[in-house]
Each structure stands twice: as C-alpha cells, then as structure tokens.
Length: 431
Image (cartoon, rainbow, N blue to C red):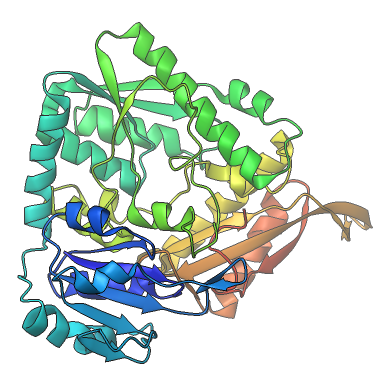
C-alpha cells in the first residue's frame, strides 16, 4: 500500500486512482494519523503527503505528525515543502497519465512496491474475507439493481451462496419499470434468493413536507434499514447487512480537511440502534474499479455498465418536499430521456443522464391559455470515478426531440432546461 496523507488537497482521489492504475494499492488517510495507526496498516511501502489549499483549519495551518518522517517508510511530498521527504513534487494535475509518470519512480524505485493490485486478487481476497467474517450465518442485501449492489450480490453469491438473502425495496422512488427489471434479472435469470417488498406509501408518507436534502437522505436511509429489520425478523439467523458502499461515498461524506459534499445513505445515515453487522466488500473501490470487479465476477456487461442511480432514487431528483404528482413528472420525463438517448446511441457514450423537477413553477401557455407549471431540467455528465464530471454536448436535434416529447407527454410541465454545470462547482446530483 501507498498511503496518501490528506493535507488539504483537492486531488487526493485522482492521485490514489493513478497509483492503483500502476497496479499498486493506495488509500487516503487524515493528515494527523498517528504513527501507531500508520504502523497498524497492512504492508505500507510509502507515504505521499498531499498538500493543498485546504491546509488551514480554524485559522491554523495544519501539518502531518512529525514522527511520520522517522517511521522508516519513504516519504514523498506534493504541494508541501519538507526537506525530510525523499521526493518532492510541486503539484499534481488531474491528468491520470501525467500523475502515473510522476509517481512511478517513487512507487517502484524508492518504495519497491509490487504490482499486485488487480481485480482477480481483489475478488479472491474479498471472498476469503467475507467467508471469514460471515461463516455459516446469513447476510441480508439491499439489492436496488444498481451497479454497486449488483456487484456486491455477485461477489457474495460466490462467497456464501444460499446464505445471501436479497431484498429489493420498491420505495416509490424508482425509475419507470425499474423494479420489474430487477425482479426479472435477479430472481428469474440469476436465480438469487430475492424478496420483493413494495413500501411506496410508507416512504412517501414519511417524506411528506420534508424539503431539506440531507433530511430526505437520512429518512430514506433510516427507513431502508427499518424495512430490512422487519424482513430479517421474518427470517431466521440474519446477522449481517451487506451494502454497496464504495470509496467515493466515504471520501465525499467528509474528512478533516475535506468538507462534506453530501451524506450518503450508507455512510453516516444509518440508525444508531441498527442490529446488523455490516458487510461492505466494495468500500475500497472507485466506481471504475467496481465495474471491473463486476466483469471479473462474470456478471452481464449490461448490468455492470447500467446507468448509475443514487440510493435515495428519484427522491433527490424531485427537489424540495416530494409530491406524488411532481415525482411522477420526474419519472415520466426520465423515461423519455432514457429512451431517446438509447435511440441516439448516447446510452453507450454518456456515463449518467437524468431529469430533475424543482419545487417551483413558471408561467407558460397551454391550449391558448396561461399555465403555471414546472420545468424539467436535463443533466448528462461523463466521469470515471464520480469525483469530477464533465458535461455531455448533446446535438440540438436530439435535445429538441426530447424537449418536444416531454412538453407533450408529461403532465404539468411547460419548460425544459439543460444543465451545463460541471463537477466541481456543481455536484452530479442536484441534492
């Protein structure tokens, strides 16, 4: 492992991905990690101190523990001038290839790291770790049908077989036809032990009049766990809850020098009285690595490259307090967008695309009379690891066709807008 110490850089994840692309495992840790914590980490070959603009907390400039330099492990500094470091680089870019070239001598010549980070080793290691953790007991998995939960399901099926119980919760915030597709694929084709639960009214009642995005996420995450606890009580011997937590979820949920972007329903949004022990076999992986893991497991290509979908579903795309009619407008507009992107071949090119309906209306004209209806906002972005994203430049004829269909086919909508904001400054989702 190459350890990256976060001293206020925006580029920690890019650096970690670049090192992993060299075939060497890397993780990000806080700047103030103790020497004892560092030495407890497995097989650390080198340390990179990654400085940046967020290196001041509460008005005080931060630094790493000085004992780090005497730990007998090679140290490299990026954007942080320390004479004790074996190697110094002024700064990194977000160019993976450039970073790989910059760190390669340190990783291999100075640290003598070995290229043993690959998906075959990862899958074998995780299967062994899961078997060791779970034994002959049972694991309950929240199977949304998304890439993360699907890959978790594939890995756990190899590790523990029939001891995996999958539960698909239709919380009323799924995309059009989504739940039906999940049941067909996992229950009928992959023969997984799948329980289907429709709790639409329960979720929407809980979310009524709740406008704050963080509160919505926590309600949805908390209610998910309640549903699983109820399902677990109907079964016997369920001791574990599996989750599709991945590395960006952990990073985005906040560190000491990186403020929280948003909470994730599987990081920090879980009830304190939860009865399950967690199984999170993907928590070390970036999104592109999760897909590689899925292919390594032999999962279908269309599943592994399925459109990403947030845990809270359309709940964070129906902005503000969710109403059933606005939720339906999001769902129908999204279905039109997905159909037209598929027709244009953009579904294979664009990483994520969806619609958003905000909780305000604008004046328009319908049937020669004044209307007061919602706008639909289209978002289409490309990314590798979900930490940064660029905007897809969709041809005007395609956008005009989508706009025409949405205005004609979706009730209570009189405008269509296209979101041109990259990440950063925007996030991929609106909430």
